[in-house]
Length: 224
Image 1: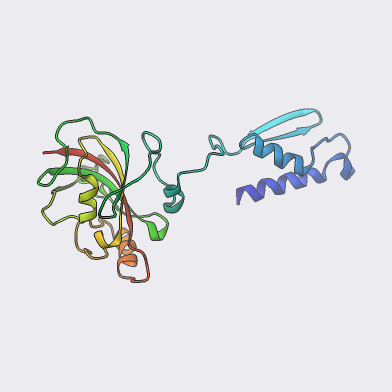
Image 2 (image 1 turned 60 degrees about the vertical axis):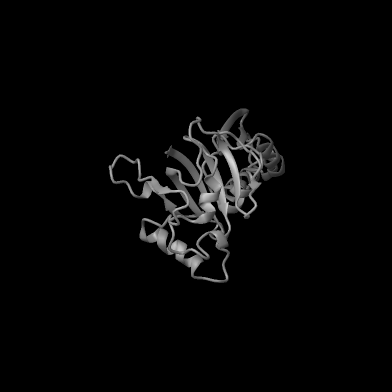
């Protein structure tokens, strides 16, 4: 634990202070250092023989609390346009708009769409079970978009409901409850590409004691 290591080093430094019997070394108390460290947002400042040395331990980290769903599902990509509240659809699916599309045709029943997306298991602290980039046929890191016709019965109904109204280049975060996801539709798309992803999904779907709610980060690549 990096924080404990830092505090241990500060404690050792405190032991080398004038109060500890060493001359020529002036180190603030551990309590003062800890308070100073937190107030400076991750910059520990130590003074030795009148020379001040600042070391950035956690660059870029602020004290702002992360969004609730970020805490629940683990590490996530930074939202393109900051935070907006989730909206709950009548069927229980939750959606959060991160970027409005560039216009044109909107997704509706009968639309042919191409999506890039990443799926995470909320019950397993955000473990990824699906990623369109996992299947990289071209070899250039582009991945393989999920292609389907909305309403054709091949994709999770909760995911379909979550993308209705989106246009090209739009980005949404969609939370699909188990009854509109793999809990009642275990064979529908999107299905994992790798063995590790498949095992992660099955560990939830095949365990009735676990909540099968899933989260998708979705970008619409094409609507026809």
